[in-house]
Image 1: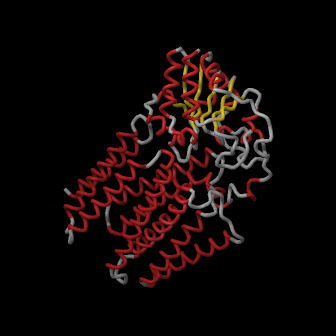
Image 2: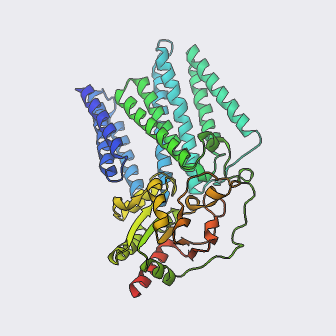
Image 3: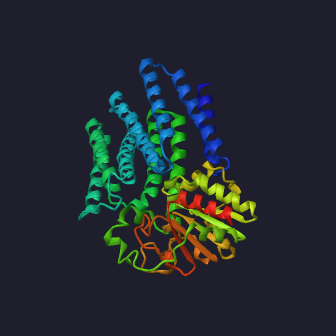
Length: 455
C-alpha cells in the first residue's frame, strides 16, 4: 500500500504538470500536484519509523506558516524573487538530505551508484542554493542588475569546476567524507560566481535553469535514499525547467551558453548605444488615448512589467470592458519573456479575470497587428523594440518581437523614456505613428477610461 500511495502521488504530479501547460487549467493543475505532494508526505510520515514527532511537527508548522505568509504578502512584481527563493530552498533541502546520507552511511560499503547520487545531489543542490539567492538579490536590487565581471572570470569559474569535479571523484573513489564536504563547499562558490556575471535581463532564464537544477538535485536525492516519489517528482521538475529554459532562449534568439557566459548587458557587450531622450516624441494625453481607442474597431493591449508595477490589471479590464460595450474587438498580445518570468503577464491578467480566449501568444498575435487600429503598450519595452528586427548592430538583434509598429496607431504608456532590462533605447518610441503617454500605467488607464466615457 505504501508503494501504491507513492505511485498515486507520482500520477498526481504528472497530471498537475500537464494541466499547468494551459492558463485555463493551471489552477486545478497546481492543486492536483499539491495534493500529490501532500499524499507523498503523509505516506512517508505514516510508513516510516519517526524518532521525534515533535521535531517533524515543528518543521511542518514553521514551513507551512512561512510559506502561507510569504505567498499572501508577495506582490506580483516580486513573484520572480519568490520563485528564486523556492528554487534555492529546494536545492539546499536536497543537499541536506544527501549530507545526512553521508553522515549516516558507511561510505566504504555503499554501492558506487549511491555514492554518485549523493555527490550529485549535494553539488547541484548547493549550486542551486547560492545561485538562486544571487538571482534573488539581483532582482530585488540588493545587488546591481548589471553583470559583475572581473578579468579572467571564466577561467576562474572553469578552474573551480575542475576542482569541484576532481574533489568529488576523489571523495567518492576513496570513500572519504572530506571529499564530499569540500565538493559541497566548492559548489556553493560556483553557484555565486556563475550567476553574478549574468545581467538582470537574463535573470528569468537563470531562474528557470535553476528550477531545473533543483529538480535534478531532488531526483538524485531520491536515488540516494531510494525514494521513488522523490525521483519521479524531481525528474519532472528537472525536465520541465529545462524545456522552459530552452523555450525562453529561443524566444530571445540566444543560446544558453551566451546567456551564461557572455555578460550580456555589460558595457562591453552592449556596444555603442544611441542616447536616450535626445529625439522628439509625439506626446499624448488621456483625451488623445480615449479618442484613438473610442473610434477604433480593433485594439490589442501589450502588457509589460510596468503594468505589474502599477498593479493596473483591474483598471485595464475596466477599460477593455468599456471598449467592448462600444463594439470594439479587444485582444492581448503576450510575449514569452514579457515581465520578469515566464507566464508573468498571464498570471497578472488572470487576476483580473480576463478571458483566456483573448490572450494571444507571439505566433498568434503577430499576424493580427497589420489589421489592428490601435496597439496600446503598457510598460513593455524590449519585447517591442524594433532594433531586434532592423538593427544588425543591436545586442538584441534577431530576438523575436511583437511587431506592433505594423498597426495603424501605436500608443506607449511609460513613466519615461528609460530603457528596458536590456538597457538599450527603443526606436519605436520616436516613430511617426507612435504616441507616448508618460504616466503610471494605472493612472493612465483610469484617466483614459474617464475620458472615454465623456466622449
